[in-house]
Length: 266
Image 1 (cartoon, one colour):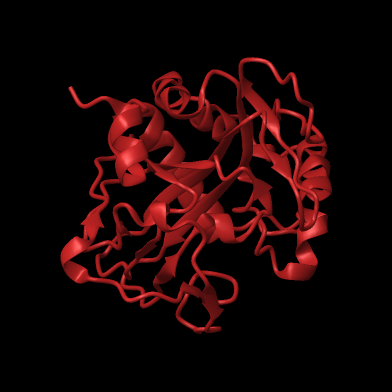
Image 2 (cartoon, one colour):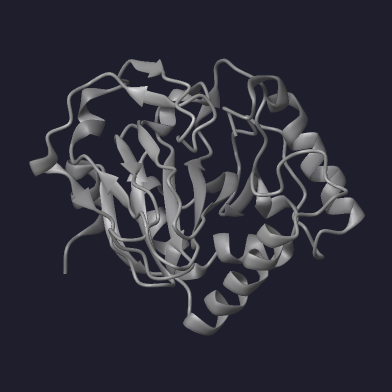
């Protein structure tokens, strides 16, 4: 068996992780399709960003023990959740996600954030799976340009200013319920969904408690595992219901500082 941390440190990613059982994933997929078709009208900010603050069943997906076990092997036992963003690629869509680094957004130091990407349905090249550029995390922070590409699902069409060798690209092909981990400095992107069904994934950002924020609008956290001896961030409340008024208020508090930047830091 491949040792997770060594492979992650060398390549900037690790996959696959059998994270969540199919029955739980299928129920979540159905709920997210309904939310996508009929978005909540009483929420000020995009419901799919910081979604773990809105519903307990979404939060529970983020703290799946097998997923947290893998994250722990990479960043240690004390784990914070910074955000959980739901990406829904519509059927027969044309949009893509430019090659980018997650570290471009949050002003964190050190760059120890890891993204856990959970597949809610089978993910492959046809429906727009992610693609990784292995070892690109070793280049440190890469300059980005803002393309404002109208077909990009990134808020400003952000894109790394480097040449991508197609021979080096690793497609992130996952079965539903599986997850992949990638370093916040790893360049990644994805193509359009060419199939008849929406493709859904949840990108959960995990970081160890020693990380600090050095710039940008303030971000808040939930302690997912372990203890927070550093207390570098304001703590969010774990939702107990399903889009109830208390959860919506908490979501508003966490999201409001990022609205002026069009949620580019979410």
